Amino acid sequence: MGRLGVVDPSSYSQPDLITTEHSALNWKVDFGATKIQGSVLHRFKVLTANLDKILLDVRDINVTNATLLAGGSELPINFFISDAVDDIGQKLTLELPSGTAKGSLNVRIDYETSSSASGLQWLNPAQTLGKEHPYMFSQCQAIHARSVIPCQDTPAVKFTYDATVEHPTELTALMSALIDKKEAGKTLFKQEVPIPAYLVAIAIGKLVSRPLGENSSVWAEEAIVDACAEEFSETATMLKTASELCGPYVWKQYDLLVMPPSFPYGGMENPCLTFVTPTLLAGDKSLADVVAHEIAHSWTGNLVTNKNFEHFWLNEGFTVFVESKIVGRMQGAKELDFKMLSNLTDLQECIRTQLDKTPELTKLVVDLSNCGPDDAFSSVPYIKGSTFLRYLEDLFGGPTVFEPFLRDYLKKYAYKSIETKDFQSALYDYFIDTDKKDKLSAVDWDLWLKTEGMPPVIPKFDESLANVTKELASLWSSKSVAELTDSAEIKKTISIHQLIDFLGKLIECKDIVDLTESKINLLESTYNLKSSKNAEVRFRLNRLVIRARLIKRLEEVLEFANSNFRMKFCRPIYRDLAGWPEAKPAAIRNFVSVKDQMMAVCSHTIEKDLGLK
Image (cartoon, rainbow, N blue to C red):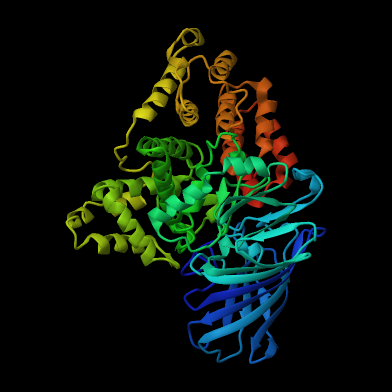
């Protein structure tokens, strides 16, 4: 594939020559044809004299016209679309008149999306909770905005947008923007803070809302909206805590939309409207930390953005770091450290399984010259990145020293797109004239950024909560069922987060003595796992069932895999089943039967996990 552009290896657009300032979307949403039809009017800023063409990213988009708008007149312009590159898309070339000067340039593109656009999911009524109305939603990160809008689909470019959306009158339309005006079957939106293309988002369905705070609501289908309001009742507190840590909240509104089960991620930080998976509805707020993560993105990612996805850790490592601080403020320092240690268990598992054949993707800064961002996606930028930041915080003197630097960094690069070297220079500039300047030379940047595998230094965490889970995993992996049945140790009370971490650590044990049906049954009865509504618990239990090779429980494993298409759960389960010869054919049959209900990013990666691609 090679690098498509100088600034971004995954984008044809040339932000060094031309950049988008504002986009006006005019959309008609056609549920019958599963397409969006309409136009986008881009206001570009031309940065170089005599620019002869504009290059945009598209993917399976049918462009019908391109028009240059200047001085009240409309001038048709020639355009052509290149052949597709797998997992990346195509290049749309718009030819400009000779002598195009620097400055503002308006171009309208009339188009329609493909009925199978990778960034859009269309659900028929039977696939929704209410069973009466269809539903559609988008997921544009990392590079799927190009399947929804012909655009500069790179986080190096940020633009404001407005949108006019025509939709069925009985349905509600929401976007990653503020609602400007509502009419019957038409909603107008405005996003006045510049954002990258991957943060453009839309959802349309039979949706209702409940308030969570003065500038915050939760949206969902009627059947679950009250449960959602209860589960996410701490949202306003999280938002306030994040603002104290990071600075003023610039997006005005913070709403949550609880998605259908086919949503592929835990959450997506679309400005003004975070999308979250329904697998967070545990009934006890135990998984609401994901909301703290998405709130943190309002600063780390949305306000200060990675310039391309090779530097994705600048979005996600910072966000996990801030998320853990929000949790620490609300639940205490021990919980903060326990959360970061639990993350390291997940990272170890990811490196051992998902990335075992691509160790180069375990680096903090990766090379995407020959790899799409979806294929590189893993927990490495999240967890290795946040561990690096905790290491730096400890090195420079703890939270009282590092948190003011964090606020300064966010203020310095607000509204900008940056690379890792920009973060390095921010750290250097902040500390060079202080009594901490000698610490700057102690940071081995190459070791942290370019070394494969686990973080090179594990910071000193409070291990009191984690030691309990470590001992339990050791006990359950080394003792027989008979020995465990009479053990008082396994009867100790543990928190739901400790239970999740213990089950994760047990999966990571190389050897588990006596891993049979009776041991799984004992686990279930000891920790009341059968009745758990917690998706993280059920996910780990199902993986242990696979590891125990309990073929008669394969149906319930597949049932869990079909209950949601969140990649965090689906991918490891399908990977585990792919390594179990007896179960692999059933896993493939099951996947083929449900893959059309998945978003493209989910089905595409599972096909690779199962060896079908």
